[in-house]
Structures are given as structure tokens and as C-alpha cells.
Image 1: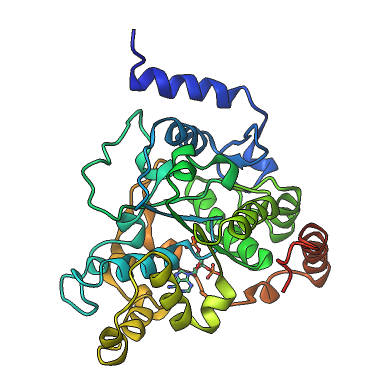
Image 2: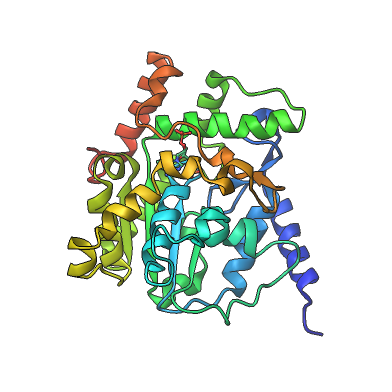
Length: 329
Ligand code: A3P
């Protein structure tokens, strides 16, 4: 008989359950982290969701997929991409702009946290083009139809030390809510270096998308959070061109569209929105306060939290892993 959705999810849950797992005291997480066959880690439901998306998602060439490691600027790139692609229907500053009521995570949903969860296979066929999705999955575990379709992939990476500090703070919010002991910075850094972190090892994740970008620059865009911070206007223009929605000369010059989008999506503006202050986003890990996705939004905040020794340890791994790849800046 044809496999039901429940049976499909159960089959993949059994598979993931057969892989090595780390309890929350041995990883940066609130629940057990499993190690996927391809060498990356996540808790059970998002890992099952990733595998279900691979089995069931049908990509279109016009799709756009945002890929990131957690805490590397996902909320920001989602906001920039969504407001750019939908600029004509939702002019910046309109009173009914979606960001007034929805978080960027509700406007662009994750395969593994929001779409392929709860024994459901979503019907995504009716969504108008271009459909935009997001994932934290490493390149090797993207839905195979994403690669086959040739659709656009937008990747953002961030300095590992800042990613680590942001993750430490974020995971501790969940740990405190669950009544678990918060993780110390030192313990978090050790797990991070060992790769036992959400969708990590960090370095494998970045290298996977970097190689894909080098091999197919027209399919995989590669941004860095720090460079976006330095010149958000240039990155917004580049993003718009990459996804095939370039700003017209009029929009750029007279309307100041790029400037308006950058301001709309800025940390300072997003943090003041009602949707950020009061809203929650439903996900398989439970409802997440939208405000949790905003902390400081600066570069090199690690200097306020990491010892020099730990920073050097992380830098040494980065240098060893990224040497000769063109990734070291
Ligand atoms: P910090 O914890 O360093 O402040 P993600 O969106 O991938 O979960 O990443 C969250 C990080 O991006 C947090 O970093 C958060 O403050 C920062 N961030 C969120 N929105 C931002 C924005 N509009 N501009 C710049 N940084 C932003």
C-alpha cells in the first residue's frame, strides 16, 4: 500500500534515531542533537524535516532558497530579500506592509522548522512565483530537486566567533525557558570547536556553500554579514540583481528604493516593530518570540565575551580549514 505521511515521517524518524546522539549537556542545544550520516548535527524534528524535504519538495527554477547557519544573519537577509522581491506589491512605508504584522520568519519559512513538520507534506504548488524558502541544512543535504532545478540559493556567513556568541545567547534563552542550566561561554566554545552545534561543524557548512558558489556563481550567491554591515546598499542591489528583480533606474534614483529597503530592514527599525516586540513564530521547536532573533546586531561583539585564548583557538581552526580556499579575508 502507498506509504502515508505518518509512515514516511516514522521511517525517517527511525533512521535518524539510529544515528549517534549527544544529550544537551554535551552539545549546544536544548534537546538531543543527532549526527547525520553526512556529518552534521541537529535535533530530531528538524533533521527529519530536512530528510522529508529532500524526499518530497519539488523545486521550480524560479524558486529562491535562503541558506544560513543559525545566528549568521538569517532574519536580516530574509527581510531584505522579501521586501526587495515584493517591493511593487508592498511599497516600503505602506501601512499594510507585511513586516508590521509578521516576522521575516513567517514571510519566508524554513523547510525543516516550519514546512516539513508535524507529519505534514505541505502543498506548495499554489504559491505564486517566485517562491522563497529557507533552510539551515548544509549544502550536501539540500533537497535534491533544489540542485536539479538550478534555482537561486542565497547564502550568508558570519565570523564564527560572533556566530558562536549569538548562538550561546539564543540557546540559553530556550534552556532557561525549559528549566535547564544555561551553558557557559567556555563550554559553548568547546562544543562549537568540536562541531557539536546546530547544523555544524560551522566550517563544513561554510565550505560546502563556498565551493558551490565557486562552481556555480550564477546559482549560489555568497554574502558575509560583516560586509553587509559595511555596505548594506550595495548588497541589497546585488541581491536584487541576483534574484532577477533589479531596481529600475527610476526606483533607484528618484524613489530611493534601495535606501528605503535598507532602512526598513535595519536592526534599529525591525526591533521597534510591533511584530518583533509582541509576536511569536510557530516552529517545530515551539513558538519562538520574534524578539529573540534580535540581540545587538553588531560586528565583533565576541570581544565582550570570549577570552583571547578561546578566540585564538577558533581563529586557528578557521585558518587551518579555510587556508587556500579563498575564504580567508
Ligand atoms: P547578535 O546575537 O550578534 O546580535 P539569525 O537571524 O541568523 O538568527 O541571526 C541573529 C543575529 O542577527 C543576531 O546577532 C541579531 O541581533 C542579528 N540581526 C537580526 N536582525 C538584524 C538586522 N536587521 N540587521 C543586522 N543584524 C541583525
